[in-house]
Length: 417
Image (cartoon, rainbow, N blue to C red):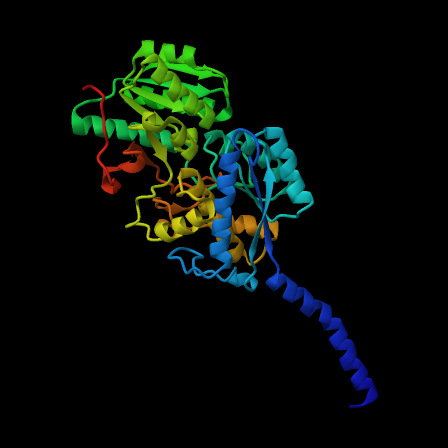
């Protein structure tokens, strides 16, 4: 080869080497995703469980477990050359300002492609402000306050239902069970903590009660993490409503049930706004006092016939966490699944392209572990295809009791008896 031609060939190889190396790294490198949850403090167990759920889904995406669901084949993100999902966790301490700072750190120092969080709606409110400013997607996995997607933000996407959707299911159930049994609920009592979650929940419940012609016999707002709820329980007892509708996180839910037992107050029906009532620590703490408690839920562990991925995914999660999936951890798994699918379809973590892919999401419910029609975001970033269910603790275990078409147990309904 002539000298000049040989030199030109060498120069071309040297020029192309950085491009080839960059392409290889881009294809094989990790996709870094941030996760902000309470890992210490009074809600630490929720965060620890969320971590186990997200790690389970990352294992499914990156590994070779061959789950019957979207991305269940594993092997990484095929459109990015088999790139793996890598999670970076941050501790919110269940404090909105700490959550804000940790979200900013994940974006500026860890350079995450997106953030998933965050259990409480109060922490979600501050995290989503940060992600909006930096134009990084925030995937709201388990935050239910309706106002989160009503603030005109463009970078928040919520995969699970809001309290409007959840509360609608609760009142639909009360109407349906009343018609089926002849024992209609005439009154409800609201008790809720003084947070964005509690306040928004109560506002929706008041509205739905008025629309259903159901009287609100008590409307009680209490300070979160109160040392005692005995005074509030006395007011509930005096109101004697047909159905108690509590909106409380774990420590308060335990305190409420114990205070009711000590005062001799036994509501004819309890339908909780999820949160603390679905935690295993709640069931462990109150034991038989929880029997008959109902809650709205985004997840049905017993819906294995309609969702064949539930059993193998739950087994993988149980091996990691030592417990079954619940309403919150199932939502964490689904949030990462939806995000990873969008990253794959975008073929990049470039923010605008990733946001566009999230907005274009169309996932059939059968491709998830959730009992929903599917996942499709409206123009505010809310999944409009998420269908809640009502579950009840019977024999110490949650069973789906509504909608009746997917129920695995008949509801125990003591109203009017």
